[in-house]
Image (cartoon, rainbow, N blue to C red; front, side, top):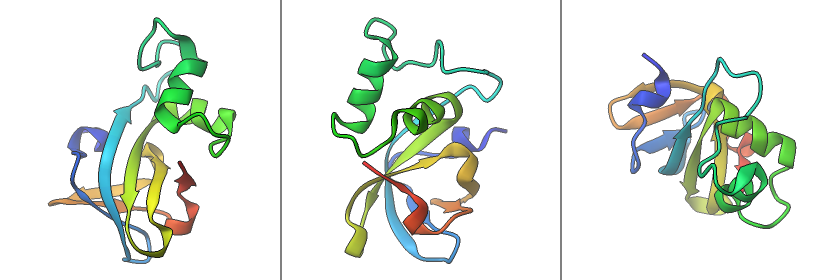
Length: 115
């Protein structure tokens, strides 16, 4: 089973050091078999750039190549708590496991992309 099939909004997010990062605020499953992000747009009517702007905000925080990759492989948007409050994004392939009500990452919190 794909790990993204187990992720739900509201789940706790724990980084690779065991620190509580925040909660899942949004998610999008990608297509890991796809060579490009074609067909992975949230709304095919607006095109990839519009989808990236909508998904990650209009600011330059997430590099377009990173955003395109995240649309292709899938991502989780995290509502971060603590010092790094705000939203962060983690690629689906950086999720180590989903256990109970928690998403466990294979990376530390400082490697989440700002959003």
